[in-house]
Length: 97
Image (cartoon, helix red, strand yellow):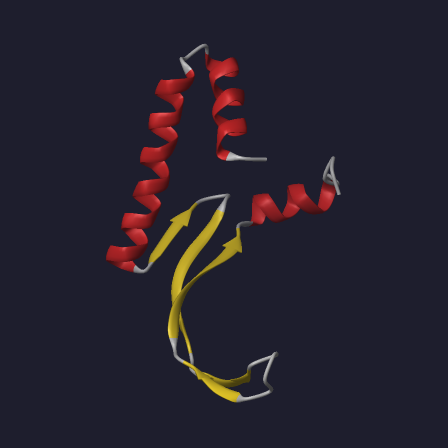
């Protein structure tokens, strides 16, 4: 499913124009990104928690040459699903697998 699929679904359910729904959806996603940049964490009750964590640097190998290289530390976004999401996912099998 894509963002556009979600927009179409919400537009049909609410009777709003797709362009308006798309603008609102993008504003919500931008808000999540802004919160992660500013606070490093955002909790959406019954959905889950997005959090910025720092992944340590490590040694790795170039698969083509076998040469050892250093991968620098970097910030990554993690997601932990909320209780309601976990319950629904475990109860209802995905329609496409």
